[in-house]
Length: 165
Image (tube, rainbow, N blue to C red):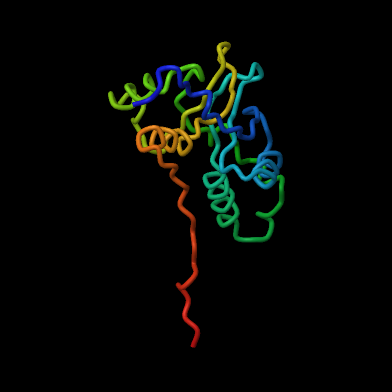
């Protein structure tokens, strides 16, 4: 299926990183300035603790603001009560040097698929974060090896969906 020497480190996608003590403004700025929908949360030593998804953060902010009957709810001091630590989601942490075949065996044994939303962070030999496992690139690589035909990501096209009257 895959070359025994092919390892997950070929499929690392860099993502923004922050510590669990980061403030709301910093997190929002990182989401705004990066195309990524997630921020990896790491310890001071660089060890991954989990992720924060932009959608979850925005939902929490909206719920907080909509719960306020007046414009007072828009004050940043009020938003400071949103604790980012409470938004950290668990992830699966894998060594980047893990072979793709070993990853595939673990996947088939269901030990890596407890949740379809669970993301995989890759770490170096010291356990420090390298990035997110790019599952699309990994899947594409496996399909190319199998079929020798590259697969392109789906493109969204709205052409032809609108009618002119």
